[in-house]
Length: 477
View (spheres, rainbow, N blue to C red):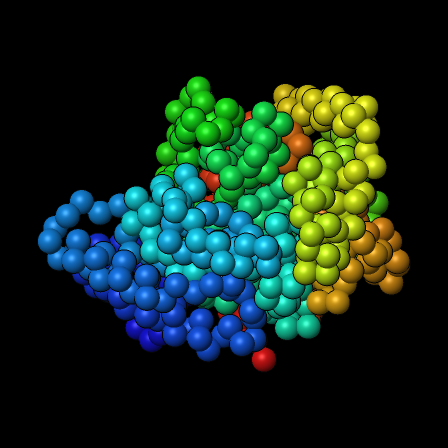
């Protein structure tokens, strides 16, 4: 198998080949490191590549195979991790000059679990500073580019993971998502990204756990890899109150294989979710993709359940948290901090306690609205983004263009479909649903009832079987 075929091999197949002694972990790691060396000058998707550490881990992984040791489900598989998550002994900068030399003493919970499952850390992927916006650039490293069109952004904030995943720079990636930060770049880069139910994957990197709306989740090229990876990430941990006392999950890795079909599954679809404009090609590809669910046996119909737009409540919550976290840092760092982060941090100081309480109460209302959808449907399908990837120089505070119309800023007009489910905690997965005439990926999102993560994965895998995409590779020229 040549290098690039090895780099694009799904994790589920790579792990099996390593277990069966058909491929060595060292081969896989060296292939990915070699491809990173070739591709990174185009993409700029890694803050740190830990080549020596990865090769040392690969050597141990191959020794474990040779000795007949018990192997984890991800044994020997290369892994990229967003640089907002602690990795023991490997630089974790939060993509900020303030932490440029920060080396954690311990892994975050998710990283520890993925290591225990056998994954090999290949490097830390880019994000805007502290993950604060839907494009991926920061003073520490510059701009990350979209592998399908180097003049465009991969989205954010897990843009490095999205770009690297699409470009074959490791089959598994970890992202974070507080308003769409996994699903936006996954959609813009043509891969799979999942925000699981609140509490399924513990989040020990958040300073505030009771009102948590940020998630740590998988980004991969296939649904089966997402399920395999997520299976190793879930489970309670004392650091996260939402993770405690949950009923055991069904086997997510098995659900993501898509066995059977969607017979009897009621799927409601909707074009809009607090917005009123969508790019015509994106809409056409979405409509064409919906047929795949019917082909798999689902009962498909338009659905317009009650919904209160969430951006007015998301902003007071997120920006006031910026004010608490970054206000003093911004004063000290000045121009060494991203101007957009300083801008939104200042905005956060302008919200009152009453504003915040109102937002929190409305968040509960929206949760009840969304959960009520599933009295009438089993799943809801929406577009993930209203249009393909934005240009690299897009200011996230400025309006974007959709079909020749200048509309609102990206949070309102590009990804109105993602942040609602951060507020409500429902599981949501994004999948490639087609490519535009100029070769840019577009995506759809499947949303399920709280804790129905297996149902969402199963539907996603059935869709993938009907409309496969993983054989497409960006040219990066």
